[in-house]
Image (tube, rainbow over all chains, first blue to last red; front, side):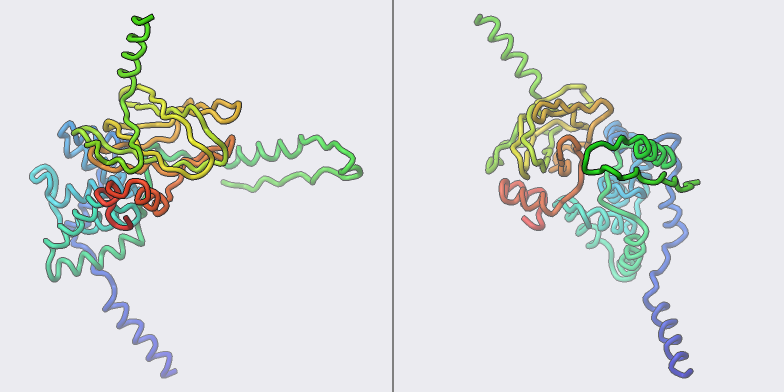
Length: 192
Length: 152
């Protein structure tokens, strides 16, 4: 009993010490991207960026970054780092997180340089918070994806039906299978 | 005949909006609106007449053929979206009617398209970044150090 109490106490203390500190309300609200009326690919974000429509580009990159597009994550990090100051919100901690995430699976010299530059600007407690928050981001968000097309939902019922029809309509010929009976009917699972 | 030849050459020059970068040759500088497009081919059969389309300008560029095996192709192209239009394998002509595998080329960057895998007649795209970096460091060591850094 004493051992169990001791174990629980250690667990509680450890979770308090190592639990990532939550970002502030202002920072959390910056992660919430404005919902888009339709799907915008990375090329649409770049088009807006080149046309100097930075708020639209920021929003497109933000939505794509949440879906794991590493290119958009890098662009978002640039925006948050103040590269386009006065056009988009500046937040070095979020810039650190996105730049580090973008450079995890698909690493390049440009992404590494941006990450190092942002890291050098963060000091003490701010850096510590950003590093802890990065751990949560790694668990929550993917990277290394390319979001160039909208994701289509698979119609599994139709696919199973097509497969079932093929199996049932198969014609068995040949002496090697003489005497064999076709397979039993395939049950289509309910995918509702 | 001479006139016909000159006209044909002019058409070739106008339609070719990409440059194939040969291994070991990193001396071709990028223009302001240009980037590198790196494609790793992974195929069990020789594929010919590979065509890539610039969806921004609606131009198609032939990029040649690839022998069976794993190989890296590096192209210097203008910024924009590029999609595979099709290729030939044996007696089959593969054509993607509804936007084949695509990627966006950022200017001033080494853009990795991915591994274009052909298992006749099926084709798909996948990301195998570490192998791509290895191939790039072997064939284009200077470009690898300039654009990728780690692992070159």
